Image (tube, rainbow, N blue to C red; front, side, top):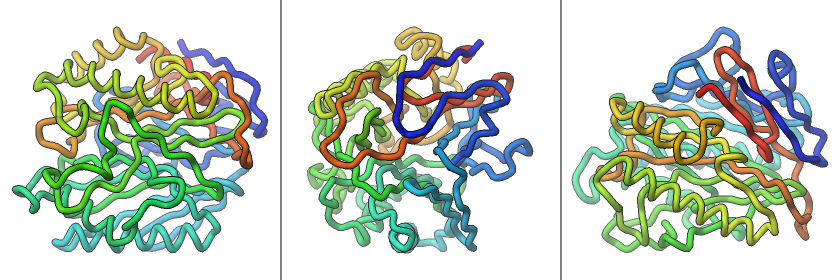
Length: 358
């Protein structure tokens, strides 16, 4: 059974449960693996759900979004937020396809006044294929850097890059943009990705470890986080990697809390996507995650390859806060985040998330 609690927020949002959830305006709903006739306007995540139960992720806003559909991309935007989704054929050149995609994302977002990327998700096949600098992930990083060569004033967006268990033929990108900048957060346990040494490729990856969205109830958008300390991968065992990831997530939440004068808890306030290389490990990973964070933790468990071939698992999160001090700048209109189960539909303000029956 799932329950919802909420703190006071000042952006006109309210928590919803059961059938009321789908009646509220959604910026986007994300469907793992395949389309769902119940949500014909949903965006498909090109990854298989390893938990079962057809979990669906909603990002809700205060007013119904406007939708623009184009040949290769769709834009959904409210007054304060834009969610874009894009699919491009690689045509045998991932770097060029990535450059084209990011140029398109930037131009279309700016056209509508959303000049700040806060979160980007990148999915493409065979992410680890190729040796050395010919690895496909490195080609992707190089293509992205042709468009975003230097970080914006607020820092790079939070990001995920995950390999699809499919042929290398299409690039899928989702992104969240805003009219006000977020605040980049780095992990004190890790070297910033954009400062990686030459060992990891000719171009360092252009993303921040997390992006803090300020406001009365700040929202922390954590990049795909792996078992890395400094810049080196840690552990061969998947469960040991999972424990290292949880320490990295805790360090990010602590760093963001100090910046926002707020506190949050991953288990209580987080909405997670877990990417797992080997589907056979889904059961042990799910059990260990629930032991570590509690059975009420909200998460999707998805089949995907991590950007280094020695890493077996990666976790990203959206984490809210319970107590916040107003930022010096303008407050954001809030985003409502939640998960819908096959049996119980739940949307909740991300500042307090309670999910059960995983």
